[in-house]
Image 1 (cartoon, rainbow, N blue to C red):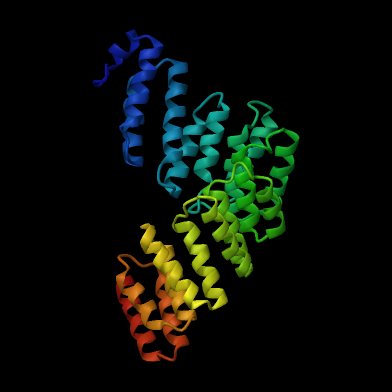
Image 2: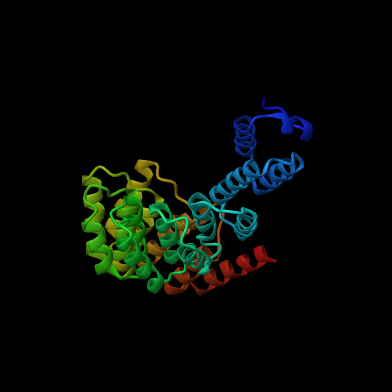
Length: 324
């Protein structure tokens, strides 16, 4: 069954076999380029109308789940526009594709509103959760609060996906009291994202003790932190100037084998620099495999803060050379 179908062959197959072939073909795709290739092959098959719409929806879902880039968002939109009667699944896939840090626009929220105006299909908890994620990315508090009201009216507010989306939105927008009220209502459904969002919200507004207390509560609840959680915890230590605590948190990261990615490395550099241990900041910086502008800036500012102007200028020159 799973060999390369040809148009005459496809025309004779029953719908369920054609759809199985579509699913198999899309699952083979590991990149946007591969998805486009699969799309081209499916077009050559001249699939019946319903199977063609099914194929487009599967391509769209795969595109939404791929690496979040502007190219993926653009391709997802073009796929969606070819579907005659998009289902809630199709809307959700496109909203998800548009709700990415690389595409921080109001497009996802506008698509959600278009879905509401159309009257059918009705949004579900996933629709609201993806739209909330888009609002958190922008960030767009006003639109997010509209979503909250609509979710309440539609009976979708109790969904763990919606609750997590609301918490993340309010924490990102520094509305800590609103975030805390959502968090407190999630006693049974607090996942890693919920804990990390709340800790991040506290850290962002400088409520350092609350952030660190909540981190301890998270451990007591048996929830294992990830690199996103640890960025917020390390940032809280930096704001408090708590070197001993920062060092013990760094040791915890190493002990637990948590991935020290670009953002966490940058947070560690910032923390050590602000807490007076510039040599340790430099060690973290030198161990980085890749560096973005924030990482270079954290190191340069840290060196300058310690009166090491020549070292700061040397790092700045290295950064400029690598960018050329």
